[in-house]
Amino acid sequence: MTNKINVSIVGGAGYTAGELLRILIHHPMVNISSVYSTSNAGNPVTKVHDDLFGETDIVFSDKIDENADVVFLCLGHGKSAEFLQNNTYSANTKIIDLSNDFRLNANHIFEDRTFVYGLPELDREAIKTAQNIANPGCFATAIQLALLPLAAKNEIKNDIHINAVTGSTGAGQSLSASTHFSWRNNNVSFYKEFTHQHEGEIYQTLNQLEKDFNNKVYFLPMRGDFARGILAGVYLKSDLSEEEAKNIFNEYYKNEPFTHVSDAPIALKQVVNTNKCFLHVQKQDDVLLITSIIDNLTKGASGQAVENMNLMFGWEENLGLNLKTVAF
Image 1 (cartoon, rainbow, N blue to C red):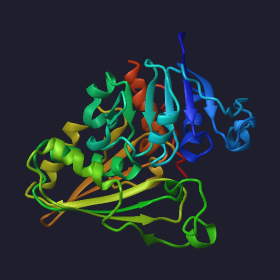
Image 2: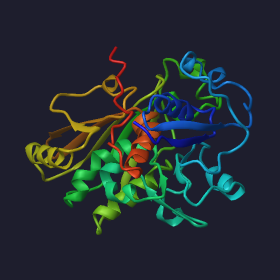
Image 3: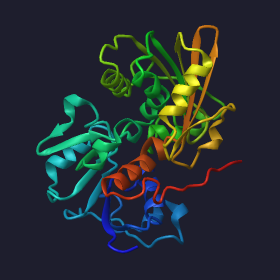
């Protein structure tokens, strides 16, 4: 393939930036023109992302590439808006932001840029013509993919309950008491009970698909003692039979490249290190349970960001994203 685009990564030392590098250095249409990190400028990226040793000789830079074709912002929540205020890019540069700064409708317009919410299974056509993307949150991705088919059919008539566990990489690379190995190992805990920042995205999408949606979402996030992945159990009372629900999910996702509905029970390692989401639908009495699994760093962050880039440039959606799971 010819006519590669120039891609810049800003905030290049974190987990999501490392995952982007692992994907993009093998993407056939990408030339990585800049990996911006003020704290690591001049160092090879392999000094931070040491698994890339032997794969690349890219060096961190303290200068942005203001004319890049696309820029991935991996700066953490609350920092992308500040960065864009202080740094100017070409009007032709596409921005894909991995923070929560521009995901909600109240914040999706920033100066002269309008951000489109980047969940392909929800709004693929809008992503294709977008200049700027607000990449969804990891929990929000796993949970919304468990709810989109029901919401699209106006089949959410009761409150939604969610119990979901994520790996330690979901907290970012900065050290904290709850990411310390001695605390995390052989341990599990709830956090941000019913107040997680990703709830706003979930409500926004449900209201987009079901105009009269007025039920509650009760979300219990959990810290797991593993590095990566999200397992979400999403359940609600429903009049649908199990077969009817499965048919709705299979019809909604029948042409999706990454989201698949499994008849068999699913387990987290099936999707770790891939851009896939696996779903399993079952019913007990009057309660419908949808189990959703993703990798928080790929489909929940960097993989989905590359998926969005592919759509924005008119390429195959899975280009550079045929990744192999860890399996064992």
